Length: 231
Ligand code: ATP
Ligand code: MG
Image (cartoon, rainbow, N blue to C red):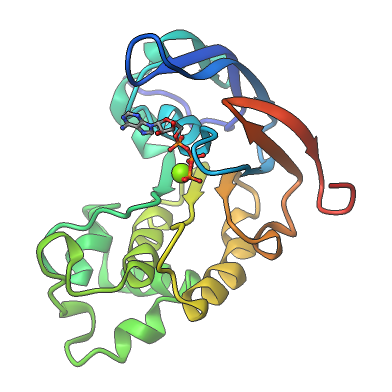
């Protein structure tokens, strides 16, 4: 029951994955990420980047192979434990109808107003929220329909950091993210990544300048790796 806090070392061991039988999206994918390492995944659309992080979030199980966290097969860990240590911002962020505050609090049910504001400030969302007429009490609408994709990502970002997760995942929205939000996310990433194991999927190299390792993904495999200087 009482699992120790994780260090956040991650291993993908010969992971294959199919959404539909017979069509492998990941094929013998191997990756070893050290605790605290910041990884960026880049590559053409459909190459499998989101699939890699979706498996880590445990939305799906590998078809073959294993994922280990701190050397322990994550299948043997309770789902809740994985969730408590993992913060993620998905490509199509999901909000539920309720207020902005409700949606951020979903990351930590007993969060105080101060913690909610602190998390929003950390991800640079506090300003846009405060500028809304009802501030944190603004209803987001069905599925967040009253907000832009960029705003939804920022709220989902605040929700992810409020529990101070050891592992952080950002799958940046591909389209319709305005340059203003893009800039906000760029400025935020550095602060949030510090001292955490992280996976960032970004569409501009400038966003991932400060990561430790950039992996180029093609057809579900790493075809190249390096850093901002040598890629
Ligand atoms: P993008 O840069 O466009 O976000 P990606 O690298 O994240 O692309 P994935 O979303 O991981 O790519 O998709 C990899 C492959 O798996 C693609 O061929 C895609 O069509 C397929 N795929 C993704 N999600 C599903 C799903 N839920 N059901 C069936 N196939 C899927
Ligand atoms: Mg994707």
